[in-house]
Length: 305
Image (cartoon, rainbow, N blue to C red):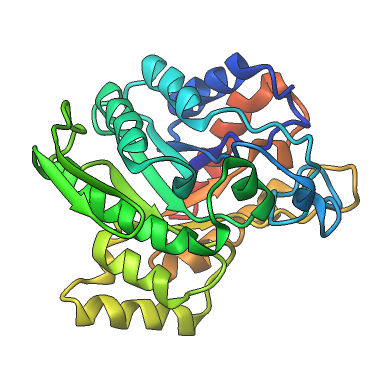
């Protein structure tokens, strides 16, 4: 199970980051495999263009969140968690890669992976907010091309020094990149999204160690991914498939029923999904009860498998 530590502001303040670190420790003690922290660097008016979420415990989606929503640095938070845990995997999801230079971001990711001794998972994404890209001076329309070059550069940096690269967006000659990440081929890379578009499939096939979709992918989408992997000489069983829980809120103020949310796990297990995300604030209002919540989740999931 993977504990989602982002967006829990109905449980604690966005400034109370030590509490998130404590929850990560409690998750590890309870038997959780990993924690996830997502990111934005800034938000603009387009953050709430579709109206805010009906229940503040819902997941933040494109256009449904208050621009004042806190988004602390995911990598700094994960570094703090790495320092107080030993087995817990650290999922940086999603990293809006095109908003940083690939050499700078590779340095940050590689250092965090060394600190965590190979426990880092990175989900690079292009994200959705035009306002965020405009604020940072990055062309929104080119974000997919930028990400593709970044992935190429990271692959080179993890392998060798010196590295030279010439692309449309990045050019450099004979840079030495040391120390490298913990593993010879860098941190584990996941990809995800709301649809199985061609660019996503191409990135998963070439670089992916996992697939973390937004919502439940259709049978057709999974067949499309399976076929692309097979054509490239890969097996979908090489990928870690990341599912989730479906919180159903009775009204705009209340928590969801945990048992009802976990009932969706067996069907996903049959499809080959092995890791499942859950956000504590969807099911409890007690910031001091997250450890008990984690233990309850593990007991219930273990009874299903």
